Length: 171
Image (cartoon, rainbow, N blue to C red; front, side, top):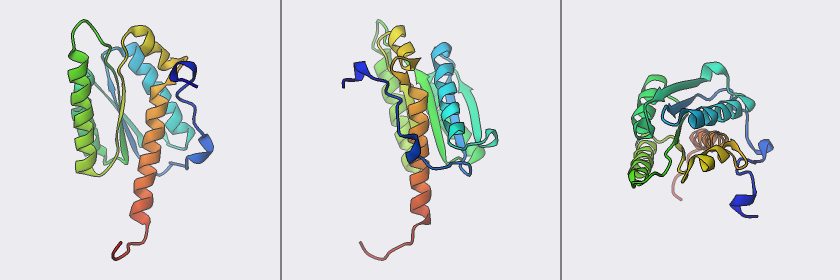
């Protein structure tokens, strides 16, 4: 089945663990707020649906997607989180601004993840138009906020499992 024919947010809920002891940050871009707020709602609902409490979900807003990596570092500095989810929407326009912004955000989040050894999740829509954005923010293709939350859960859980495993000498 092609991407155009399915909901991309479908996942096996039984494969995800309880996350009640984990702390998550969500950084939301104010630009394209109708879309990004829908992404945030899907993200929060998913985290809560797997056991995260309100006390362990921290949300901040930044002006635009370009500011997501800086916001991600700030929220992690304040709360020492298990994962940070960045949500934004950069719609392609008449110029190639979207390419520069998306690349900068992706690079910034990768650098944060490597430097801090924790997941910084890229939950940014990169659609050609408003309709494609709506389709991926709770429309026919699901909600990228849900997908970002699932990725954060999986990666934060993986990190905890690796930290708790017995260390071995050698390979």
